[in-house]
Image (cartoon, one colour):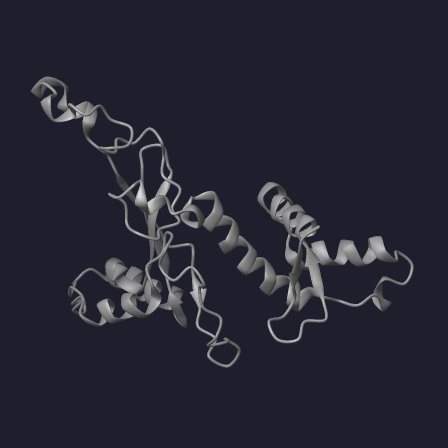
Length: 224
């Protein structure tokens, strides 16, 4: 039975691999939250005096973040040196690629370059972009934890945050177009009010035709 320590320094609590796997599946299938899962475990321990059972919620929440990264590292082959065999992909990436998308050297014939002109479209990789302005995030400087950062560090769908923000600074501000139409002016003011106090106003995905996401990025107001 494997045990995962709840803290790095002098751990006194540990979670079994079984309970971590169980919650991972529960969350994937039913979107069960960490809080509800821990609440259920406390009641399974003592359904009468559940409030007297120790609450490992803060530790379990952090452990699950690390557990997901470890599982992704194993499942994508990075833990087994897959980059030595699939050399055309970005090193260290933890993406799940759609197996039907053409990749030379992986799932295509070695003579694919000799494909007749009228059939070359079969070898093309088609991607689509889709944005959503309803996936927002409010800036909360007083309650936000500066240490609460992504542990994937740009190895999956979103870019590495520090580099992404540096690139954003190089993007010129979009000049707003002046309009004599009162209706359009009203809409523009409404949009500015809608995204007030938000540091993220939406998201854009690059995905395969089979809706398997290959990259994502946060956007700011005016689709910057």
